[in-house]
Image (tube, rainbow, N blue to C red; front, side, top):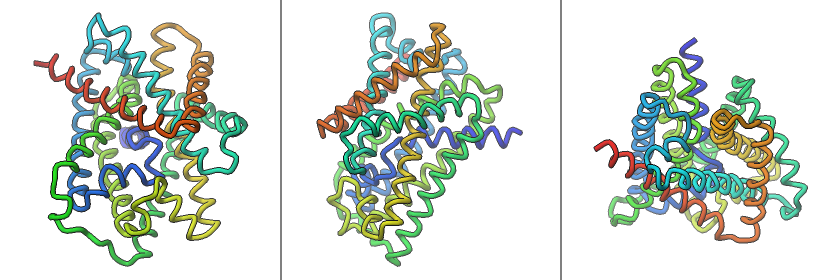
Length: 338
């Protein structure tokens, strides 16, 4: 029984930590692959730090009976900023969900139509309830998306026959370290959004510890495969904003269709994890109806998605805001602990 619970925690943790952009490949390209072998070092360091710090924060939240990311922010920022910072962070997370929607919409023809967003909201709502009421089925959706992505990456690497690994003198500077830190700051917030509420509902801290350890291994394997796949096709993909989509489109219609369905599944998973991590603690704390709160959050998500389609820089700004919020949270935590 404990093994099953730990496995579910692991899949939910890795789904929230990976975020909604990893399937497109640009995250691996921007944060790691551009820096060759040093990017590989940064990949290992950032993911190890991500789950180590998450473990420390989650343990602290259980000891202090903190139920959500918003409550943690309020506790760390104090009375002056405690009523403002958490809400601004939640707005940023909803905007991030909107950019995930917008990114997927750009892959489709006539993506500016609002009908697409309305179509996509239905599975997001359903999967939100799956987390709460039918958790096992939602975990299987995560597992299928992750497993299919791993198979695609292995096929991509195998199709080239070898992975060109740059020498360590290539990109011999500190930029790889800064980008590894930026990846850590962004995905740290994404991981905590879901993991804190889940941890508070778990009776056994053993499940949380094993779940985080397993999620870290899965995250590292996913990132490393994506990184190696991009290195395999470096000369073809280094300038693309959606490298994997461009690659699979060249392979044929069936690959492009399969990739599109996989991206849809991951989009649903990411938005559902974020919404659950925000909506459930808020509804319990303020005695709000989850359905009403979900409608408000989805409305803001759709608005952010449409804005991301009109402004290409919107997604970058949102990710930067969440990244620096992650740095601020870490700084405040260690300052308070002193």
